[in-house]
Amino acid sequence: MFQRILRKRRSPAPHGMRDYLRKLFLDPPRRDNDIRSLVHLREDGQVNGFMGVLPMRFTYRGETLRSAIGGSFMVDGHEGDPYAGARLLRAFQSGPQDLSLTETANDVSTAMWRKLRGTNLTGYSLEWLRILRPAGFMAAIAADAFAPAALARPLARPLDALLRRRGAPPQWTHVADGEFAQRALISEEADTAETMSLIRTFASTFALRPEWSESELERMVIEAQRKANYGTMVRRKVLARGGKPVGFFIYYGNRGGIGRVIQILSVPGHEGSVLDTMLDDATQRGLVALRGRGQPALVNAMLGRRFAFVHASSSIVYAKDKALLEPFVAGQAFFNGFAGESWSRLLGDRFD
Amino acid sequence: MPQQINADIRAFVVDNFLFGDESEAPADDASLIESDIVDSTGILEMVSFLEEHFLVEVADPEIVPENFDTIARLTAFVAGKRNAKAAAGT
Image 1: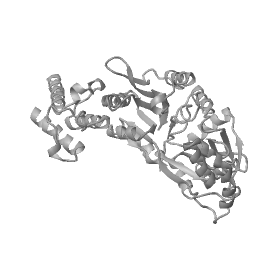
Image 2 (image 1 turned 135 degrees about the vertical axis):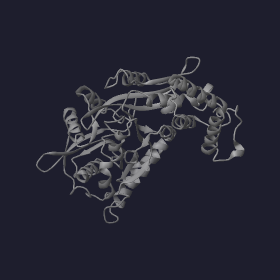
Image 3 (image 1 turned 90 degrees about the horizontal axis):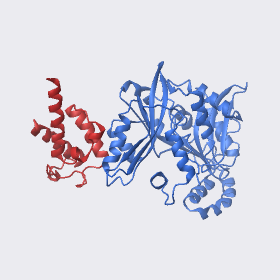
Image 4 (image 1 turned 135 degrees about the horizontal axis):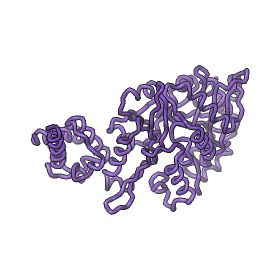
């Protein structure tokens, strides 16, 4: 079902993908015996629906909150059995968790969540895009839709060299040579242990944040290293002049391609410098654009840097105790990325 | 009481799924799914309506065509829930 409905492939699901789905949803990074993935059975006993559920603990005002992150929501032939999706989502929300979350709701799922009084979080749901090289960007889009169009990529390079000299920066269509270099801070590669430490440190500035165990966060960070469809991983810490870490970013991408960012973290007040450093890094590596998921804490800094925003999928929260919605609505919740589903290999990795 | 329940459910269906067009209102025993009036999103909207308007609790296994497919079945379902609640309170 996952291969056919969500990946839209006709070929049988590769063994690697079957194994990963089993591992992810039957042995998730955080175990909670009362919060599990859900299947829906037809009257004849056949499975025709699924909701993948990842338990996660959060902390808010000194209290530990149980949460369930729902994704990979699918129903086989949902038009013929509209009750299946309704029952799955309702059963998910009726679980023992304090917070029901998703960051990958498509338009249909979003409408269903809203009918069950879920709160769609605009600031977390916007997808951002920063074009670095416009001709290369168009070539990458064309190649994604029609593989032979990749042959046009070499032609885009001289065109971009020309375009990047036009207009005084900042321009939303491109970045000029060295545009971010002067404002960028020093960045260095971060290993797994440093990454875990930095994520914990920067997450601590949020009012509501995950309460990862050591093994839980380590597994997420390690699994996030593999996203072959997105490209090579770039995972760097951003340092102030004295060497103190003030930010962190992780993205995936190859020269001539569109990079996918899954997490940007910053000391409050330094968001702009962290963004400049990341954009400078991606420009120097030859990427044609970067895209990623919105974070309310970053939006102000993005506005002055010519980012574009579109909506692709929604981040939604549901809580029986409405007071728990406040940090999400106020943008003070650490959500998406390593507090969501983006770290998983289901998003961006190849299994065949 | 079932007449009032029926009228409230009918009004909800007309207002929310038929843009207020009474002339398109289904018969009491017409399938809301087969008439293309309600889909999976609409079923959830109906669940929230029943819980908030009639103050009844809908359990997940109760979200089935036997309870939700027609206005008559919805009426009987809500009436049954209310009767059970009243009996439990006496």
